[in-house]
Length: 295
Image (tube, rainbow, N blue to C red; front, side, top):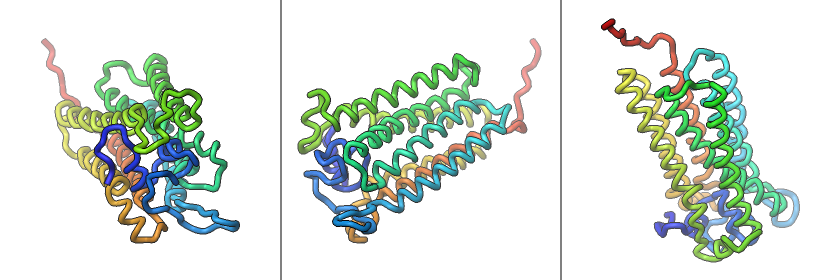
């Protein structure tokens, strides 16, 4: 089970497959001083070459096509509130899925290249969960959605997360500075990555769920869309449990064939799809609108 010591990644990297472990390992892969079950997957031609996470690679490929389809479907909902913001969230998830193939997919890549994909993966997770939170705010119409100002603020803030968190990961892996030099040694402590890659994304997800609960119940006065929202939250939680809790048991039980990261990829894909269906359901044209009496 993952470490409870704030900022430490040693136990997390021992128990599961995470992109952050590639930047915290001196060999820039999932092997490190943390030990644990080694995810080997399937053997490739050549000495000691493996495609370690084939299941996650295939599911990430499916996620790419599903996300492209949802972006297309969103484009057709021209009158929907938050259409562009939802598409931006989907673009973020698309970037996560592409980077995931080369970060935790364990392709036999050059170590320096794997660090780049891992940094993109980490930064994309931070940016995409932020975009999800922005989507939760958009429904309250504090600012007209889809305008140049709204999109500029949304894209600008998301790029700040992507570039900022991505740089921290790159600096940690390449050791350009001495700021995070100790992160490569046990217990692989990195407060910056712990906060921006693990803690804050979880907070953005929780904030989104709370904001949408209030919006649907208090503003729309409906409960039917909550089925999609609740299922999305449950699916996301199940994926995290597989990745951070159950993973070592799966890896040991399958002798390194698969681990919990495969199920995390699957349930995250399901969760994103359900978030889209939730958004689609609350932007339909047939919701009863309250009639405001004339004074």
